[in-house]
Length: 65
Image (cartoon, rainbow, N blue to C red; front, side):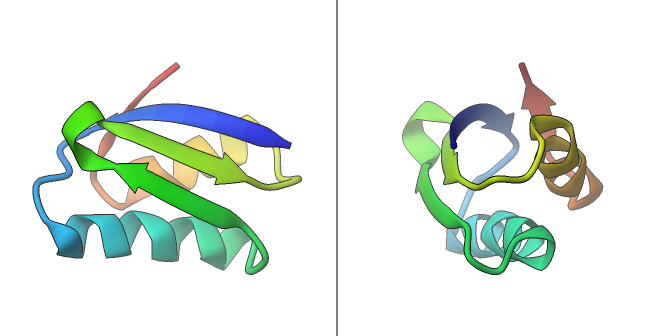
């Protein structure tokens, strides 16, 4: 299932890695594509949206619907 999140606060490659790592801790098979300039995180995962959003937020990033 494809899901898109608007994530603010990502300013560098380390931020992208932190978000990717947080998602893959929930779903190791998840495909994650990040467009930092658009604050966009595209995720292919079977996990519920709320679970993925919470994982990103717990890394310290603001997640919009």
